[in-house]
Length: 275
Image 1 (tube, rainbow, N blue to C red):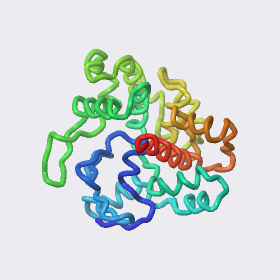
Image 2 (tube, helix red, strand yellow; image 1 turned 90 degrees about the vertical axis):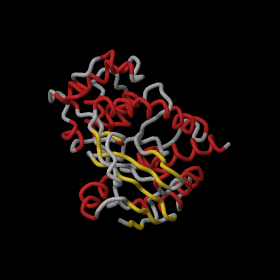
Image 3 (spheres, rainbow, N blue to C red; image 1 turned 30 degrees about the vertical axis):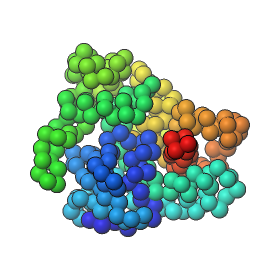
């Protein structure tokens, strides 16, 4: 399934810090598992991506997952025509990023795991949990038992703490189990939070042990698709302090601050890595 869109760059999405299961197979080719399906994505050129799925599966899952109905060009053009030079550079550099519509439970557990871990360590931990508690999925080549779905709330709610700790979760094992139980038992209704406001979602998420402001905002943005959320991690804090002297006005980007955050994050992190 060939898709043409000038604001769809798989490498940028995979490296933007919002998801941890999208990995490179080779140059310009990535794979991921979401909603129980495995897919390979090949960036043919700057505006063309080949999805290894049928049109039916694309319309059922991947069109929404990659948020392809949202007009990111409008946001990029607005930032490029503005007066903020840092945001101009950020938007131009990362204009292929889109906010994925990830499975809410996967985002919740993933960002609980992400605390005080670097991205490679987060990925390793999550893949281990998926192998141990998920279900195998079939690749387009018919291969099984290589890639796995993200575990259900039930699977992690009844997981053994020591078994989780063997998968490099560290102190987060308790948080993972308690969050999974809250979802499994209905104490936390993630679908209701998708339909709620960002503020209500953050308040509800922060009732979970081990979920602070940053994690709650990450889950709101990347798991519940509240694109007004603006998570502040060490990279964003560096930008707010060093570039804006603590005077960045979020109100200027009301309703899409999370997209701005992604452009900022990807630009500063890529610049640091390149430098």
